[in-house]
Amino acid sequence: MRQALAHVALLVRDYDEAIAWFTGKLGFVLVEDEAQPEQAKRWVVVAPPGGGGASLLLARAATPDQADFIGNQSGGRVFLFLHTDDFGRDFDRFRAAGVRFVREPAAAPYGMVAVFEDLYGNLWDLIGPSGG
Image (cartoon, rainbow, N blue to C red):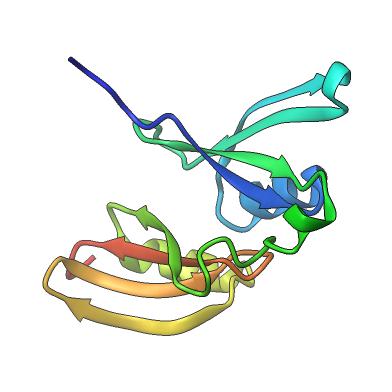
């Protein structure tokens, strides 16, 4: 048996602002953006460059209850983990693009890690090899 995690749904306020942030600040690639008029929504998928892993399905909140969870999908814990082959390059690039880091880089047994917020306040780990 072979299985893989394909997408993780991320609640967003607006498709276009989320696309702009993920592609502009993090350098993600817009994989799909298809209107689904029968459901009054879009199927929007972004992914880190290089592929090979799960992508984000940007899911616009459709109800006030869903909107309450935008930016807090994990109750304030780190929610998503972005691995990179060059920690220093991406940390510097993200910071220059205006990404807000809430925890500065630190060495961990598994490499370097820093915590940043996405445009809504969800917490992410940026993780890369030590010395990179």
